[in-house]
Image 1: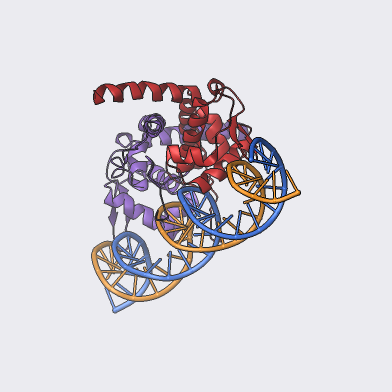
Image 2 (image 1 turned 135 degrees about the vertical axis):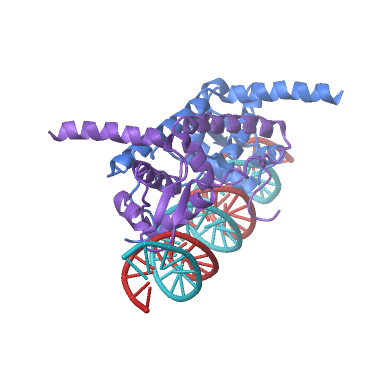
Length: 159
Length: 159
DNA sequence: TACAATCCCCACCGTGGAACCGGGATATAA
DNA sequence: TTATATCCCGGTTCCACGGTGGGGATTGTA
C-alpha cells in the first residue's frame, strides 16, 4: 500500500483545534468591522500592526477572503481592504470555511468498509456539526461587541 | 521575528477534524470491547486484520493506550492486548485525549495580548468544549451497540 | 532447553500543510 | 512621474501524520 492515508473515513487533519490562520483572519475581519462605518479602506500593514500579525502572511489570507467574497480591495495609493458585507451578516463559520477551505471537503466520506468505521464516522460527523453550530451562532459583529464589552471591563480594572 | 509561530492563543494544528490515529484507536478498542467478556487477549495482527489497520502503526497506538491505562498487554506466545476497564466506563474523549495527547495541552492559552485575541480565544474554547462534550457522551460500549444496531440493518437490507 | 510467538522500543522516511519571507508586476492617487 | 499600495508567484523551514524496519525482551509450549 502506498504511503499516505489508509482507507478511512477521515481526510487528513489533526487535533480538535482551530488554526492560527483562522484566528488571523478573524482578527483582521474584526478590525475591518470596527472600521466598517467609515468608508475608507484599511491597509494590510495597518491591520497587521494593530493585531500583531505578520503582514506578508496576512496578505495571503486577505487574498483568500477576497476570493471568498468577504472583502474587496482597492489597489494603489490610499488603497487597502474593505468589508463587502455587513458585519452582522457574516458568521464565523462562513469565514473559517473559506479560510480552511472545507467547502469542497464535505463530500469525502470515503465509504468506510467496516461497520465499525461507519459508526466512528457518524460520531466524527456529530462532533464536527456540534463545533460548526457554535461557529454559526457568532457573527463578526458579535466579536466587535464582545471586544467592546471586554474593553469596558479592562478599563474598570485599570481604574 | 523568528519563523514558526507568532504569538496567538492557538498552538499549532489545523482544521476541525479528528485524526486517523484516533479513528484507528477507537476501532481497535471497539474490537477489544467486543472481546471483553472472554478473558483471552487479542493479538495486534488480529485487530489490524479485522479493522484494516496497518499493524505496525497500530502497535504504536496500542503502546500509547497502554501507557494511558486503557489496555494491558501480555507478552510472549498467546499474548496480546486486553481492555483494563469496562467498555461502558471509557468515554471517547478519554481515548482521544490520550491519543492526541492534549491533556498536557490545556494550559497553553498563551495570554493573547490584544483584546480581540482574547475574544477569539473565548470562541475557540467554546468550540472545543462543544466538541468535547459530544465525545464525552459516548463510551466504547456505545460504539459496540451502534455497531450491532447497524449490522442488524445491514442484514435486513441483505435479505 | 529450544523455539516460536508475541509484544517492546527506537529510529527512520515521505508527504503535506502551516507559517512565513522576497521580489517583481500592476494599479492608483497626488 | 512618483510614491503608495495591492497582486502574484515563488521559495523556505518546521513539524505532525501515516507508515515501515530492525533488533531485543518476554513467555507459552514442545
